[in-house]
Amino acid sequence: MDIIKSFLIFTIFLTIFNCKEKYIDDNDDKQLSLNETVDYSFVEIKQIDKDIRTVKIPEFQEGNTKVALIKNAREYYTKYWNEYYEVDEEVPENQNSTNNSDQDIVIVSIQNNFGIVEHSGSEIVYGEKIKRNDIWVFKNDYWQPVVGFDTPNNSIKITRLNNDDYEDIIIFGGCCDVYTYSILLGGKKNKFKLVQEITVLGSASMAFNGTCQKSSILAVPYSALKVESRKLIFNCATNRFE
Image (spheres, rainbow, N blue to C red):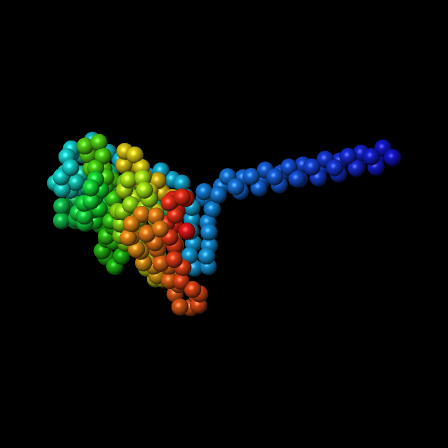
């Protein structure tokens, strides 16, 4: 009887322990909801919560002018770019982003305190460096680059998605029936947070006719999938495209 009683007690303890472990795992899944991936067959939405930073180097020139932006961009891309280049592939040592000429650095646009700068990246295809568009922010009297992600072959849209009066950024682009949208929400002191990455198998187009529900992304699958298009609308309550 003692052996049977001991076995029953052990079985009850094991059952309780397993239930407790399951309860902890379920809670962990809920805590990780910010980083969950939603897959709609041909549209994948990855929820992210990552602060995006800018950098300032000693050689930067003060001033909110195009001349200062070009000078700072040249200094950054020829001397410091590899140090802050954050992608999976390693960049070859001593390989500068540009050829150290102003002609290789082009200001695409300036909007309020934001600039979009085109320059040659380190990736070489058919003997030529791939062009990149990067975001620069005028902050604390200096033009500074936004770092922390890669933007080759991408375009950049500066707009206002929500009603907080801060500029937001959408980085978009791709090829071969795969397009990606990175959603960065602006905050105080020109700080940004990467909140979503949306990948579309097919093609996509954006419409920005105002804040909240007036901003949308139309995702169109490539024909082989034989599924309906999907329209993602920005929800100001969640600060996400849904």
